[in-house]
Amino acid sequence: MVTVGTIIWLASDLLFFAALFAAYFTVRNVTPELWAQETELLNFPFAATNTSILVASSVTCQLGVFAAARGKAGRSAGLFNVRQWGMREWFGLSFVMGAIFVGGQATEYAELIEHGLTLSSSAYGSLFYLATGFHGIHVVAGLMAFLLVIGRTFVTRKFTHEQAISAIVVSYYWHFVDVVWVALFASIYILQ
Image 1 (cartoon, rainbow, N blue to C red):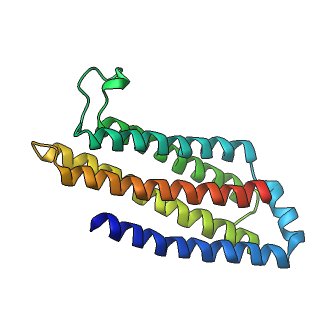
Image 2 (cartoon, rainbow, N blue to C red):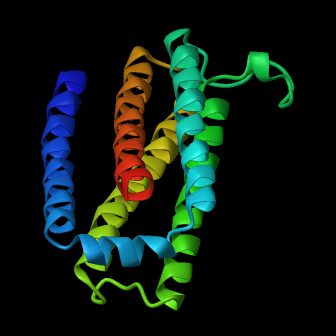
Image 3 (cartoon, one colour):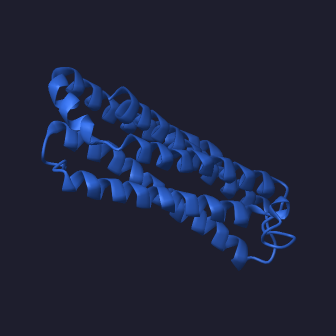
C-alpha cells in the first residue's frame, strides 16, 4: 500500500511540475526577447556538472535499493570495499551527492542574483526561481528521507522487509526528482 500511495502522490506532484513547465513555455512564447536576454546569464557548464552529479546519485540510490532487497543494511567489509556496501553506504553517498547538488544550486543562485536576475526582476526570473526552487525543495525532502531510512536501520536490531520497502519508496521519490530535474535542465539550459 505504501508503494501504491507513493506512486499516486508522485503522479499528483508531476501535475504540479507540469503546471510550472506550462507557465514557463507560455511566457517564453509571449516574450522571446526577454528569454534571449536573460538566458545569457546562465552558466551552462556549471549546471551540466551539477546535473551530472544529481543523475549519478540516482545510480547510487538504486545500488542501495539492490542492497536493501538483499537484506543488506550495512557494509560487510571495510569502507573502501565498495562491493560489500549495504544500503546505508549507497544511500549515504546519494545523500552527499544530493547535498552537493543543492549547494551548487545555491551557488548558481548567488551568481545570478549578483548579475541582477532575481525573483522579481522579470517574468523569466520568476519562472526560473519558481521551477528550480521548488525542485530544490524536493531534493532537500529527498535528502531528509535518506537520513530517515538510514537512521531507522541503526535504531532496529534487524533489517526488516518493511525497511527495505521504505528504501524502495524513497528511491521512487529520488528517481522522480532526478527525472524532473533532467526535464528542467533540458528546458532551461538547453532549449533556453
